[in-house]
Length: 309
Image 1 (tube, rainbow, N blue to C red):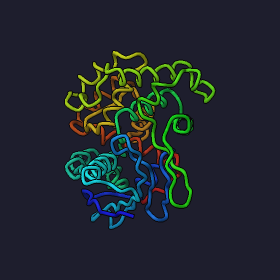
Image 2: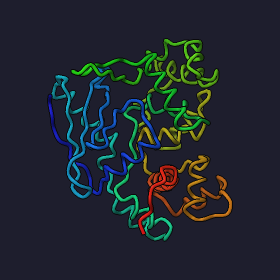
Image 3: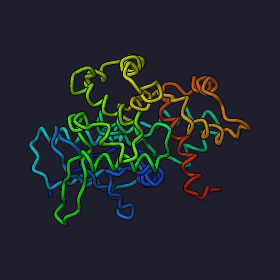
Image 4: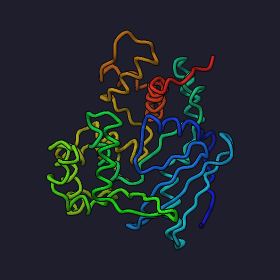
């Protein structure tokens, strides 16, 4: 086992991350909450690498202990570290965001309750878009089930020393080779199957160059990707937030965000998209983080968490 540590920007709450995973299941993860441990496969280049990730330290001195049995070159290890830092939002300074959030009493409560919570990003942009398309207009549990079925169909299998099997998310090339008829028996709708395969083929044939997206402004990415069939603004906003880690996204059409705002602000009716965008003007330039904390308020209710008094 090769092990090394990655320091994280405090505050970082491992507990909040594991609680969020209860309502946002990821079939790629083996979760051992009692040990603050996650295991999953990351791609290093095109190579699947099984990795263990154990959170040590404290909320104010957080460290991620990384382990793998794979033999990695110095370049591969650097790539793995970059991916992990991105996935776990390791470098975000929450303190100036909290200072701004505390200007609103309703949000100051969330800062106190969810201190140290961060987004968990997708490890690559192909995966992020496919997962977002899968999640369109269905609940989180069914989305996780469909993702698991796609992993089993087209992903790469890695077996650990105890014979436990893990699946790496499929490559664009693997998904591009699929036919709609391969996905329909797995309960993918006709349209969802078409959109996923079309997206994979657009990457393989060069219509979409994912690396180019990193140099684009948010609205450029929206314009570029919404030209593809089945990809609308909400889908690209999710890619920008969960795939690219852009800090100022406000997916105002998201029903979960509407529910969360109604809950947090104790509104009699759910705000519409126009009203959410108006409210979000005062949340700039960190609207992604505001959205996360409002979503988490809904998640905490679903998990029936006790509220500190």
